[in-house]
Image 1 (cartoon, rainbow, N blue to C red):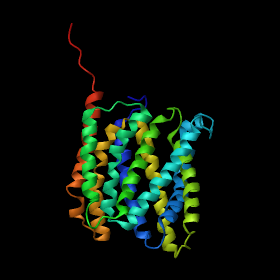
Image 2: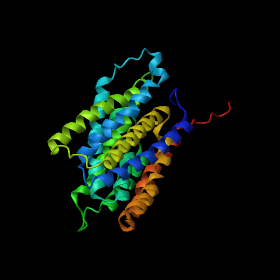
Image 3: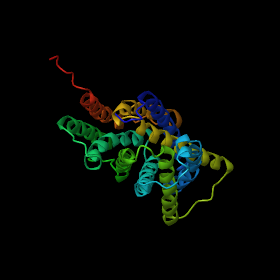
Image 4: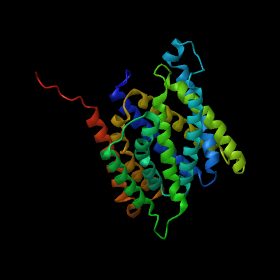
Length: 302
């Protein structure tokens, strides 16, 4: 258990982050008709800096340490920003090309990638139970993507790529020193993401002039929601073990379905089920195994 372990608060923050991410995703899908994924990623990161800067300035830990901006693991922080950029680009493209619930559900395969990445990055040992869970979840992903179906397109792999990138971001959050404030870690990633996304947008074809004040309002809200969600998620990851948070994250699958149906009149039952259930089942199997391994073994009375 980490010295800063506060599971209850971490769960609340992760659920709030989940709802903020879904709200951001709805705005991205709405705006994707007029703006490219690279543009939206650049705008999202630019306005996402606002909550990052506010959070850093109000951080008592940062002030107590002399308001230092340099951290020992600055290279890792910048690398995470580059990975975030790729995750965003993949996911935003998927939102513009696929049903909202389908794109969102496939990204929940991040729990499977997290298990695999924990081996080389965190040095964790993964037993047969967790590998079976990964296999179950992977079968669910295949059933949702339907790679052998006539309607299959390569863009169905975009949310899967996003899941892998987001998993890498989540795992590497555990590598930072405990005395480094979460807002500072997030600010490094945010600044790198702004630079990366803006560069991609420039070479992608440039920026489309914002059509109206209404669009600019949506763009600003998108960035604020996304920046706040990422901050909450980083804080929650550093408060407790990820296995404590994962069961609650799967609440996002039915939520995404309801939101997609309500706002875009999408109801992809045949696409999502039963694959979505297997994705959730695989993730929850991993969670169960993690929690059972972390329980202390009772001592026998001598």
